Picture 1 (cartoon, rainbow, N blue to C red):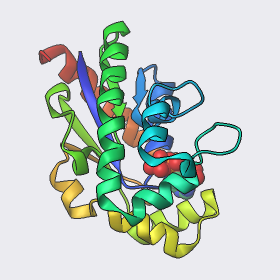
Picture 2: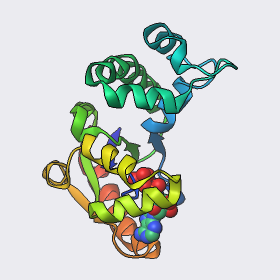
Picture 3: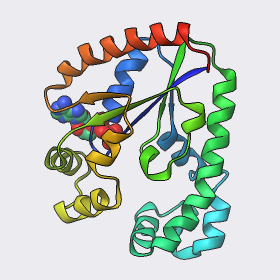
Length: 202
Ligand code: ADP
């Protein structure tokens, strides 16, 4: 199926934009949501994470202590790679399974770390990047999450910068104006993707 990968830094507006595509009837696969399910109680990645990182990343009630895990992998790049080695293949498999169930002109796959991991290129026909200045990202994430400025800065520093992401883009949405301004940008891209999906084979 014709697939558009949506990526952008934290707080850039991926969820807001994927909701607008969904409103137009486009099926959306969200790899963050899949990662969350995989690490929820009963999730397919939970045991492996506990085995690797120990009880220090688990809460007393047996659920994942996400804050503890986040601290762990932020402090230690090799731990981060190990976590990714657990999650990424499982996320990828879930994406493949979902793709096989869909019937639509095209699908939007939200992949926050598309540029960082370099994955998914062979299933994507198009890369859509949400771009906005880092101070705008920071303010939005602080407002949404209650994280401190330094915590958001650390997350941003671990992600690709704007220029690297833009270099991978086929299409760009600039999300610096109001959320309403996104609607027309999304509608324009939707028309483009409908046209492309009828003329390209996957
Ligand atoms: P991402 O999914 O990339 O992390 P979100 O779509 O969740 O980003 O947006 C981050 C936060 O900023 C959310 O609280 C969202 O409501 C808000 N937001 C997104 N776009 C805009 C905008 N154009 N103007 C103001 N707030 C926005």
